[in-house]
Image (tube, rainbow, N blue to C red; front, side):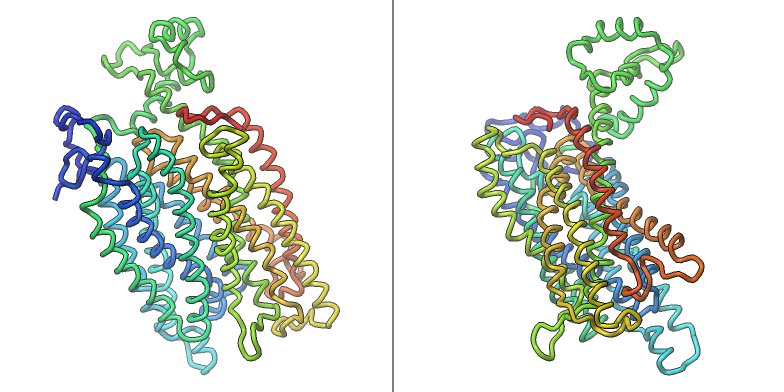
Length: 575
């Protein structure tokens, strides 16, 4: 079976000439040109959405209640557990950079997805095995001495957990980019369908996450952690089978015999650095000779030095071209947007850590005799997304389009900015609710009784979860589309990975921030902001800090977005 998205020997000259109605740059599983009428994009993309829903069910099924497992089964403190959750989540979100690089340069997206899913299944299987081993609390409760079993449980648990992170590193950037590849950007109808694809992709992902949060958190808290980890493993096996069944329907991007895009872009920066002492007159002459003065963007003009050949010993043909310089500028242009999105990711990391710990202290009675798991409140994030995405796609966009005349209603950067503002408001709301929770604990004399439920309904937390979900519809979907669209075509898996790296680095920064604040505020026997006794802690201070950081970075984001120049003209302008 010839899968051409990873066949590096397929040269441009050897391809069958394009016929009318064919999709440029794409072939079917046999290596033949794709006839658009015979290969509708949504048919193939639906397989990707189904597989991603299974993967997100598995990922959120592990992550949503992970802090509870670490504190109750492994006996970790609240702060340590939060740091470990953030460290794992951050690693899982950063590894897609490596996975995307391997896919775009060597294996291709299809093969990378298959290999990553096999690793995913292995990781989930080992995670299930670790969960059925006796826990540390079992030994404490029965006064048994420590043996190799609890140590093996901890080692196996973290090994399998990070094996899942490695698998996600290959799966996450490729499956979404491969799904978007099923739509032809040169066709106006399919281009609009691609924009909707990102919305409905996110809807499907959040729907599966909502089910995972509700079902698996209940199973893990009330039935068995082994069953709670085993169900995702079975589902991932089914997902891999579904993905393979769609092999004959997919469009595969052609990898031509040319220099790796990483080498090209890296070569531009190296050449510009070597020529850093070049005079302006020499650069101007070279720009005029190459025609760069008419075709080059005005931003990052220092990279135009890469066009010069000042090194007499440089081999002929090694001078960077205009297109390579512009490609490097396009990647560099993304950095300010990437950097100013990091605080949003830090806020995002609180959903599965401190939000959950807050909920565990409140009255979670749904009906007499039945309490909902604290982690299940994350369902409201997914519910808000599920309800708001159709509103956004079917109502908001057409209304905005009437005013802006843009196919997408608003620009990608405007969409991201709206979500950032909502995220800052979410932190303000979270801080105010936490103040009320602390005051309620004082009012009823429960400050030094952390194991007693505070007589305050858990539904007070719902607004901050809902605001988080609506913010995600704007910012996360916007970032996905932005980083996919604005990178060079050959680096689209890397573009998705760059989006993932925002969430990954944000989680790691959250872990670092928690660690620093824990050390700074917990000295001399004082209760830290993240004390195990949350009635003595000050999560409200932490939320106010995040609200302030969100406001500062939002202002910086507006500045950089205002001057951003889009890489490809698609009837949109900067913010």
